[in-house]
Each structure stands twice: as structure tokens, then as C-alpha cells.
Length: 317
Image 1 (tube, rainbow, N blue to C red):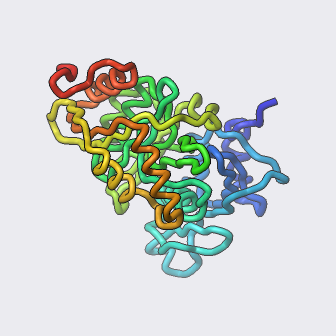
Image 2: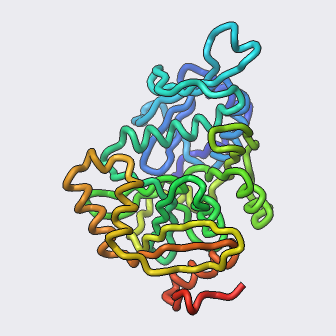
Image 3: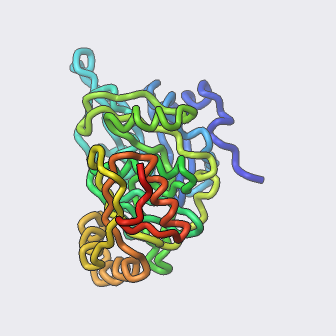
């Protein structure tokens, strides 16, 4: 029998459990998190964005015990803030008071790449099609998350929009599908192309501008235990009005991009060098520029289906 999902609680019971001393425990990919928060906006966002995630019982092992709350003090009256806690300790400075749910998401990401060194973690979006994963390592502002969202609505399975977790023993990509974060103009772009998708609230004036998360596909959550083989490494860049262009990339440059975007490469030492090298060896590597999301999705689908994707043969707008 499958575990009950968060949606089975109802929002009232969800709020009560988040506020209780035992908290709310759920599974996200290979990790189990226990979350506590008295904030209504956190409960509302979790009810919307984590509805399909399996709940855990009181005897299940927990990887992270986290919380988001307001710090005590008189200044909360005129300048509300929120803090993230791990095991009762606050590893970050407080953020403005309406950023509770984004702070929870950023904190959970930090728990994974900062503490879970059973995997080599690369800052990249990762999606699977036909059993193979495309790895999209890129810094913030490159259009990575927008492209990731377009691909998952174009027939690709979401593994993660933020973290490529590489298993050292097998070289497989380990899925960790969680709510997808979009910023600024990307929010309207995805809402226009996928109006049925459930978004959380928009949060303004974060360090990344306006941020909103949307609910990952239920199929991606259900298949979170299904790993994928690395298939391609693609360095994306959004360029306004630019045609979708996929160019071969030297493997040495692709390797260095993976190293630069790896959070815990130094922890692995020589093993990390060999692991990322094995990913590069098995993957065709490309640089990619795009200005129109539908055209980008069409080109990636051709790539996954083994059709020609050279710059001279790219789909026309």
C-alpha cells in the first residue's frame, strides 16, 4: 500500500501539524524532512506545492529537521523577519517577513548540498527523456529554470530544477523533484504556456527579485526513485530574440563548467574528478542559446529522439 500524501491532510490539519512539536514529515526524493512552522503562508504554500508528496510516520528516519519562524523581539512589530532553523540552530541571517516559503526551499537545498555528501551535487537543472538525463549547469539569470519548466511541460520528466545529484557508485542521476522556482519575467512566461499549473504566491524584493514556485508534476513525484543515466551536458543561455542554437562544446570546457557548479567537489577530491570525468566521457556536450521557449523545447525533443540538431539544421521559428 502506498503512503498517504500531504493532500490527504487537508489544509487545517496541515497547519496544526506544522505548528505541533512533532512537525510534519515527508519524503522528497532520497531524503526525509521534518518541517515545523507557525507561519500561515508556509502552510498554504506547502498545501499547494507539496500536495503529492508522501507523508512519513513517527518511526521513520529523518534526514533534516527544519523550521521557519519569526524571531522573537519587539522589532517584529515594525520590521517582520523570518529565520530558517536546522536542528534548532539558525545557519543564515533572517530575511524579510514575507519570504518564509522561499527561505524554506533555499534552506532545504542548502541541507542537501551542504550536508549530504553521499552524492556529488552540481548546481544544475536535470530532466529525463527516454531514460537519459540532460544536465543543465548554469548560474542564476541564465534562463536555466525557464528552460527546465518548458521542457517538463514538453514531455520531459523533472528530476530537479536546482540540483544534479550524481551517485558515486553508479554515476546515475538521483532525482530530487521539488517545487520549481521561477524568477521575474519567467513567471509570466510559464503561466502563459501552462495555465493549468498551480503556483504559490509571488514574493517580491528577494535577493533574486520576484520569486514564485509552481507544483511539480505528480508523475515526477511518484517516480522519484527512478534514476536516470547522464545523457547530455548542455550549457544554456537565454538571449532575447535569439534562435534556438545548439553548438558542440569541447569536453574540457564542459568539465570545467561542471566543476565550477559543483557544490561539494572539494569534499570528493580525486573521486570527484573521476566522477565528473566519467559523466563528461559518456555525454555529448553543447552550448545552447535561445530566445523563444517553444523553439527551444522542440530542439531538445529532437536531441532526445536522435534527430539532427546542428546549428545549420535547427528548427525554424
